[in-house]
Amino acid sequence: MRESRKLKKLQRQMDQCTNYEEWRQLAQDHDELSGQKRWREVDQSSQYDYSQIRLRLDRLRSLRSRHDYQGLLFTLNEGIHGNMGGMGRSSLYRRAKFGTKRLIEQYIDEIDDSLRLLAELPAEDISAQDKMDFFYRANICFGRSALMLSGGGVLGFYHMGVVKTLLEQNLLPRVVSGSSAGSIVAGVLGTHTEQELEHFYDPANVHFEAEREASVFSRMFFGSNPQIDVGDLEGIIARLVPDMTFQEAYEKTGRQISITVAPAEPHQRSRLLNAITSPNVYIRSAVMASCAVPGVFPPVMLMAKNVHGEAQPYLPTRKWVDGSIADDLPAKRLSRLYSTNHYIVSMVNPIATPFLSNDKERGRLSAALGSLGIGVGREVLNFYRGIAQKQGDNWPRFNMLLNGIHALMDQEYSGDINIVPSFGWYNPAKILSHLSEKELVDLMEGGEHSAFPAVESMRLCTKISRTMEEILHRFEYGDLKPDESDYHRPRASRRRPPPTRADREAMRIAAAQPSSKLEKPKKAKAKAKAKPKAKAKSKASRGRSAKKTAAPKATKTPGRTRAQQAA
Image (cartoon, rainbow, N blue to C red; front, side, top):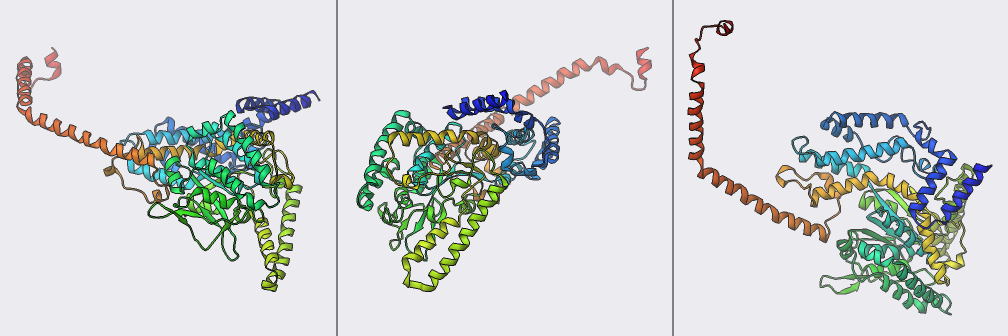
């Protein structure tokens, strides 16, 4: 009974703490008191293949201790992926408040140390070609992580708190997607460097911006005709997102942001706008289109930069609306474009939040009922959709409404790690209504706090991919870049992101350095040619002195044995 009260007290303290370091200490105390710390120390569990993980861990440790680098490379070549033996299962990271099985943590640390060791080895141990082949292949095999920000009206301020926590912990993925309200945050991330974001998240600036946005929202959603206030939304986006294209933003920050938009006309497909699919499209217009809620804001025409650097309509015959209608979380498209296979989801969409949980696993019964309800809803929508389609043009608005609802119901709203607000149900009227300054700041702080339980899971699940990204960047533009004559570019490198402005500058500096290195061998050769006689003379003098010192030894008679000489 006393233990239960202590656990509840610790949980209340965790809910009220304001920074991650404080939360982490409380979470560790909670695990120790609840017995979850003992669960972490024990390898055995039915949720993963602990024997396989232990065997591979012992093998890697043995190879490193014996300095068997070729064997280490061969063992790692057998396969590096995030779900080895089921260790990537989400339930393993939900049981304890902090961390997971110690065996899994040790295995991830050992892989990380082994990768760094192989990267630093000289060419005599492992050639540059073998290193490049291995790291490019392993990078594709393991994959990358992506952050997906859902739509949710003014609840998008929640995403800003989540991003703040990830930035502070150096866990923000370089691949970010956003829909509707999430597109605003994605646009901010893609167009601002880390130094600019630190200024952006200054408490004084946050309160000032929240006060300003709160007054804007009150004017936007309390007018007789909300569409005439579209200029207020444009003003918000113009203040937060600079006027630059996707390609320009990527070259500035190196972040690969994507924004989803849905077609306003029927028989069209949604688009995922980014530096690959639409490099010349202005991010500001893409964000405006993704935030154009049907019935609230008019459809938006995208703008792009032409060959002369002038703004012009992008696909001028088409207009676009809220991206969350068609593809709130574009996981499949991100996987195809960026080789992502691990997804961190910040979810504030009221359609999905009741069915997700970020800190505890749903019961089997509730999960089954939720899946059954979604399945029944889809079948009912398909029935009425079929009737509406038979009527053809007689029911155009009803047909478009059913298509939109079906698109919303037919999406996947979860990822590998889900960050969800503490409130399960949120008043839909609040989503497009006035929020005070305090409510907006509370949303940001709520997002920041909701991300705390997921920090350690993200750190563990993304550690290997972050290490490989760092090593490959050093191979391509940094201190580990080998001579071009020592290797040829592997095919696996074709899926690597293109160089940014900073990367090109690093390559330019690196290309200028070998010229000075080439002059040194020439000078050395000239010096060697200038001093051949001196070297020969010194060798001759050494030979004469050696003969003089060796003269007494030459008195030995060749036929005598060693014993006779000793006598």
